[in-house]
Length: 271
Image 1 (cartoon, helix red, strand yellow):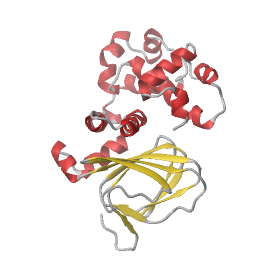
Image 2: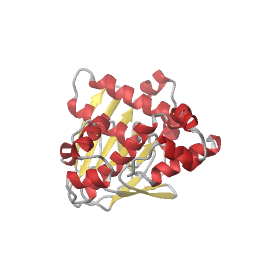
Image 3: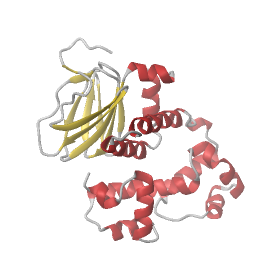
Image 4: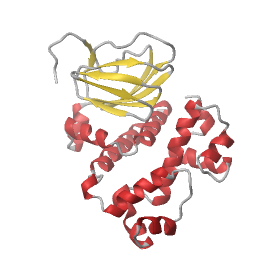
């Protein structure tokens, strides 16, 4: 996608953010961009390599030709190589994690840019993938390159394998809606089955097929997602957040949070 109007063409590892760091892992590079203070934004630009951008916190309005989108914490977007866009930031500080992909990487896995675009639009648990990618980029040891590659490929494959809405059985849609509506409760398998009108064994046998994880993992992810939001947007203590999000106590919250993100809550808050 090459535009006819003038804009800035950014080479691999270049960003418009006033503060950023890039770690190059050969065919994949990880950029961590920060808008810590109010600054002028909104310059039209494009990237040499296809790129995925994840909003860790903050927000901005993204403009592409003929379209605008509000990007909030948890949003993940794909940009084709040389695709013009601009981002107007409304919230400071804001922090983003970006992955730039070399064509050789895509070719090695048999992907084309459209595959990555589709995977990102389906967005299977991007928050946990990209937090772990950031952690590995900051660690940057002998294993980080392979770990980042495996995290990203798993994200793409799990997203592409997600069932379309019209292929989900009615009970699976009802289970998803109920778990998301009552994310801060600890719902038993029996109660869930009763509410959606199927036998408990139906849910336990087929849950992973439709959700790519166990029911326990799914409900923990919902709680941690909410906790992440509260850490950045509220002044609640860790004990209060643990209670609000339905954890049994603070130590339980801390243990699950670290297993999902790789960080202790207090450490994550300082990122």
